[in-house]
Image (tube, rainbow, N blue to C red; front, side, top):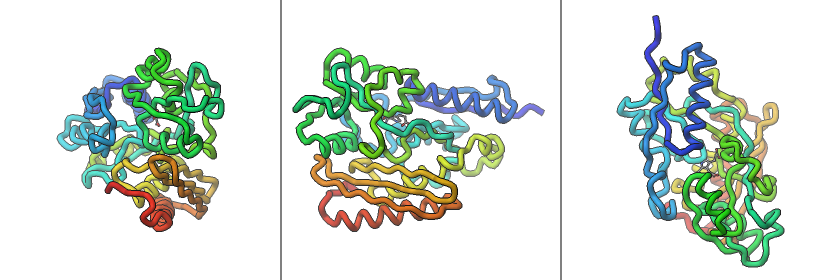
Length: 310
Ligand SMILES: NCc1[nH]cc(CCC(=O)O)c1CC(=O)O
């Protein structure tokens, strides 16, 4: 008997569409379904229609909320997300049930005139809406100035070329997926700039009660990436639920051991508290525990020195 068609919900940006197409292809390969049995449905999300600063719109779940509503009302069977955009506290009826192998986790520095962050002239203008990137750059270079550079990756690169700002920062992973990685001026090493929790990872969210999808999705899950981003997101969860605080985290699984690095910064970069820990991790629970404990410990170290908006 032929199984009913599965519907993948996605945002309409080129990056989201690429990611949905990738998931469609992987599901077909793993389950032997043909492409007609796995259809892609494009949904508009709030994050795609607003123009101002993300944090002014209650940043939480901006890019994922509509897809989650569509999962809950049965419009779609699977939602494909950049895990970086997925809030750490989710709906109780939903679950992220597969994480694809992670791409390049680094941030990319992109500029027409300047070869690297270190080469930027005094007072250079950086186009970025990301609180984390602004804070990290300010910590390195307090002279830098910032402006908003919103829109999808293509739009941002066009604005940069038009001279709206001196440089911008984007995730290497997204640029690679859009075959725009030849635009990367400097792939910034993670010891210079720690990425956002879950940067570079794609996740597939479904209704928790869809046991029928377990067999379809299990082959797509990458265990190392799953454990790494679980620790990173637990660190984030212990510190902030609103994506209004500059927080970075990166975990690396090496055999049975997970190394987690994390940091929180004041928005203007004037204070940066970083931590690192290593522990044996066999399950996602272990990874969560390790991340959450480090987050709680950093929260203590912060004391009252950084304002949390939650
Ligand atoms: N917040 C937008 C967003 N969500 C995921 C990515 C890139 C791909 C990824 O990190 O998986 C981007 C753009 C960017 O930061 O450059």
